Image (cartoon, rainbow, N blue to C red; front, side, top):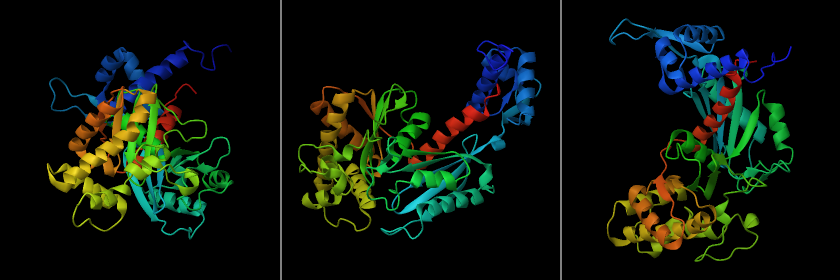
Amino acid sequence: MAGSAGTPGTPRVLRAMNDRAALDLLLEHGPLSRTRIGKLTGLSKPTASQLLARLEAAGLVLMTGTSEGRPGPSAQLYVVNPAAAYVAALDVTPERILAAVADITGRTVGEYELPTPGRRPSQPVVRQVTDALAGAVKAAGLAVSDVHRVVIGTPGAFDPNTGRLRYASHLPGWHAPTLLDELAAGLPMPVEYENDVNLVALAEQRLGAAKGHADFVLLWNEGGLGAALVLGGRLHRGWTGGAGEVGFLPVPGAPLVRQVTKANSGGYQELAGSQAIPKLARELGVKDVPNGPYTEVAATLVALGADSTTGPHRRLLETYATRLATGLAALVSVLDPELVVLSGASLTSGGEPLRTLLQAELEELAASRPRLVVGDVREHPVLRGALESALATTRDEVFDTSR
């Protein structure tokens, strides 16, 4: 029958659009009454009642008490059913895999960390992934079969033309040409892969400093120096997935490194990456540079610089800002973004003092003058972005009542 498959404008499609609008409102605002949902959607009371009954029968909403304590008679409240679907995310680094499970509302219900030390993985990557996922699922009190979708964030990017990981030679075991096929065979749910810095940008776009912005650059500096590019509201990944691999960008003040992908180094990374900060601190006369992982040491030194107004710590912060601006000027000159979000511990630890210095430096080096902001998503931003990615796709599937 014509229109029965969901032709635009048919009652089925219109109902589905109203259903989705109501579900999105419940996700955004929390418990809502039938009357409130009607007002927010523009639906009549009878239509709103039918909608809620339909969503409750489909297992997508639950009744959750009443609106006592407000003027007028109490009203039944509704929420999205958290158990309507679950998603999982993995944040992969050379040292560990961090896994998490979230319900359809976005609440994290289970986490697990699997250490993966050493240059040679003690277990195959597929086993590492399934073990990390199983740990998070167990922590959530669920079964693996309850997970609707998983998104895996890694350094570098899987080339869509070859399926092989590029720009991440420091991630052992992840470069086999058959890895994606092996992971697809080893996981019972759909699995997607995304660059870790792209996922941080997604988290900031959905939840943080870039919310409401369609054109922005996220500059990341923690384990490595990288960027994510959001143009017209969408991530720009490039032909091989390498858009934003700015650590390799040749910049003034750093040696010109050839065959950078083999050396896993480059101009901007050498000039302003986290590993350059302890050495720079010593050169500028900072005493008692702490020992430890360079990411932690760099963040500590930058924070000390932000807390200082004079002396070697302040000179460190000023020199670091100039080095950051050198590479960032090239980026904004090409892209002319509305906003630049600073993320990763070696940037966020500098807070407003670093942002102010960097903004001033950038305005002298680039004709384009985007506004700089410090990222808001600080706790496991890669993992949060991966969950948001999985949730977006899963909600589109689970909340589609036209099928």
